[in-house]
Length: 288
View 1 (tube, rainbow, N blue to C red):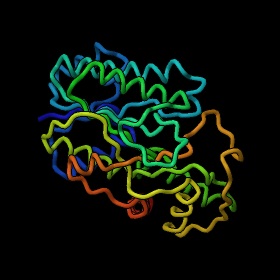
View 2: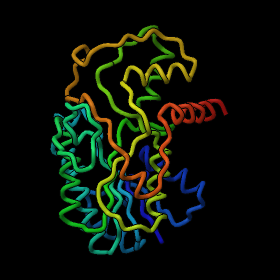
View 3: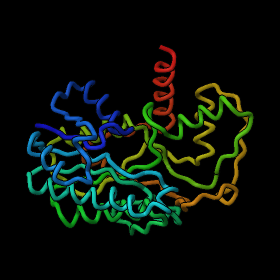
């Protein structure tokens, strides 16, 4: 059973490759971006014809949240039209789609855990285009899994953990937002969950939420990074108003993971334990 990974060179794509190798899943296909441009439907169809996948994992996305406010057309092309292209090809070629989405589809003004069927009301362009992609998938396909995740990091690509380690080493003092609350997600854990769903053979299609367990703010997340990595730097908690950004962010985006845990018997690690593992892996990479 072949599984085609789109967006293979990105952070999650690299995590899937690592877990696939660990599991010895030799039928995971990671095509070069030149052969898997999700905006070039005819090119993408050639890839479907060549590989004939049973599953397609879409990790490709426009994720520059602030830049998206001014780059609306490209963001929508990738996150909406790209998702629709993939969904239409999955339908035409009989493949099941595993699509990665985001907690940013929510407004984030409440205090209750966000469930899959809660009303999605994005407050920025990135979240809106990701929601539009979800809606197009649902309208096109019956066999799909949409996995919403949050605050993704890993030893690969650019992410918050690597940025904090860099800033902590270079600066004496940092100001970090303390009133935006959510849950970090270690890309390796998410990759494990995605592949477990595929391996399960279950057809409980629909939307699922996945992040690590626990609740934290960006400030406390940074403090955890510095504590675990033994980095000494002064960190000041500040309100969102103290660090204006082009795009608004949800104040509270902690997702309820009950559905994915019960349906697929997935054990979700606590965010701080996963952070320890990531920092350990980064240490190995940086000090071979």
